[in-house]
Length: 402
Ligand code: GLY
Image 1 (cartoon, protein in one colour):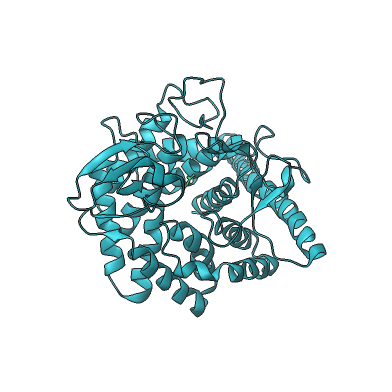
Image 2 (cartoon, rainbow, N blue to C red):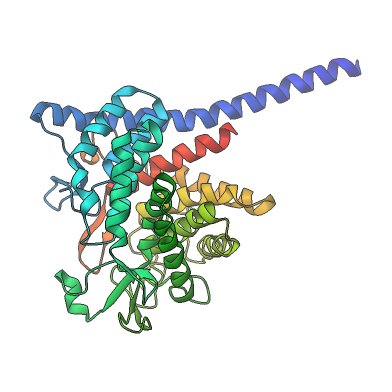
């Protein structure tokens, strides 16, 4: 009798865990299927026009804004195509990704701003990871050389923006460094591994250390911009460009910090970076103004919370960062970070944020914020929200496979 009960219990347990596995698989599978159809519609458009396009967002007139190669967002769409290849194994995505990569090759020589890291790592970095194309390897190394020209030894940082051009020229900065810059370090770490030249990695570590010293408040929230004196290396001011106020916590910036220090820990195993990423994650997850669905308002300190915009792009960056960070933690903290990432991707995949097929100009997610102070790209789809959402799905799949 007892034996029979045991058999029934084991069968029931297997059935439940099997259907839980299936539900998990279905969540990723359903999202990938949707993404394949939605991005497929963009390629249908390209085929009918016989052009290669690189979508960024939707303009106020309802048309799609497309990237020129030198825009900071030019690497995300090809990066998304590489993630589609990773998620499906279907060669069509590899072919498409290679075609779009081709249109932004010139970025490897860009020394005009720090974003070359985002642009080249998302596109050619992922391409190299998946195909080991020799030409891509050289592009990554060339891009790291270009980015390194912006390193300022007196400051110990890569200068993000030129201080004498565009809207930045009005701010009176000397050497502005933004927290987003943490995201460009992955390219440098990779270039050192590919070339054997440690100077890229050394720059990345120096930048991470300087930012650790100067970019954070005691509660581990991050400033957006730190302006350094280019002669003495001293901090001149701590301000914002895209946040609500100089002393506010701009949501995407917190995501860049979390993700950036997680990468630095992966590449160096320096415990200070892990501690920093963990502190930022705790700041975010325990914030009284973090909504229940874990998709943050565009700035935690905006006076209009809760009657202001959410930023799906910040949520996607945070989710992807948390998946990786969970793997460097143990026990409750690992579970907490993984669960939070799961909750975020589920929120983003819900009808509250994920577009309907054929709508949203073929972008996957709705409701991101580019820059409210610049009155630009507010409550729109953004190609980097889609990129980090797909990356989060890849990371979730890899984690659950283990
Ligand atoms: N790196 C620019 C932004 O996050 O908007």
